[in-house]
Amino acid sequence: MRSDSHIVSRRTLLCVGVGVGTAALAGVGAGVLTHEDTGGGHAQTGAGSPKGSDPAPGGPAPPARGGAGAQPSPAAHDSYRLRPLAGETSMGEPKPHAPVRTHAEMFLPAGQGQRVIALTFDDGPHPVHTPALLEVLRRHGVQATFFVVGENAAAFPDLLHAITADGHVVGNHSWNHKQLTRLDTGHVRDELGRTSDLIDRVLGAPPRWCRAPYGDWHPPSLRVCSDLGMEPMGWSVDTQDWARPGVAHIVRAVTRDAAPGVIVLQHDGGGPRQQTVAAVDRYLPVLQERGYTCVRPEA
Image 1: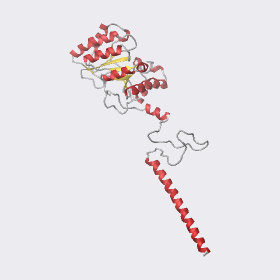
Image 2: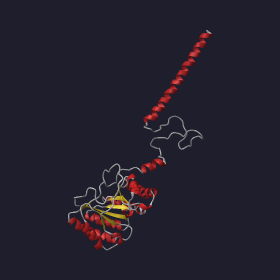
Image 3: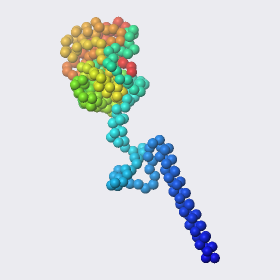
Image 4: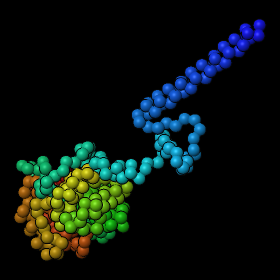
């Protein structure tokens, strides 16, 4: 009887051990499936260190936590900001990525042969001249593109909303108008990236078009422009309004050189722009009588 009792006890312990081992293996398998089913995320089960606590000295780092409350790391934030992101609020469905260009667009991409013209204004927004220009464009039923300087946009974010509310396009003209070709790539990325980030925060979408200060591009700045999901734009008609040559000179520059697909360079910031506002009001009826339509650039 004693021998039989020992045999029963050993069998009982053996069964218990097998059960514990099977449960442990099942738990490991479930853990592996949990990690794989999250598509690379790390779903944490069981007890662990509290959120935000440091790993034990010398021990392995705790797995990253997923879920809606997870905060992205700085590296993840940076990579998000440098992705070519979708669109601009007034431009419809954009391309998913801008190619690296060898030069800026000097004419409307699809404008050849059509009596269309693009009006562009740089260096704003300005608290006086931009609203005055918006009123003129609204009265004539015309849309344009405004290449804003980041520090000005930061000072007057409501003007970005006013621009897009009238159906105009907001483009990137760097943060403080530094000549990009004189900067290293990191500083170029800062000049353009800060402005794109600001426009994104204010309008809910980053810009699709960019104009380099002085129209001066080089391969590194064109690559940064592409990395940020933008197309570079130049111009084909320079009104030289920045020099304040007089209203008649600005009007003559536009009406003399108007042609299908041209891009007109003007300014709503960077100095007194009353001449520009008055000239736009004067030459728009002339262009419209000639059958021209002022349009936004389409990506």
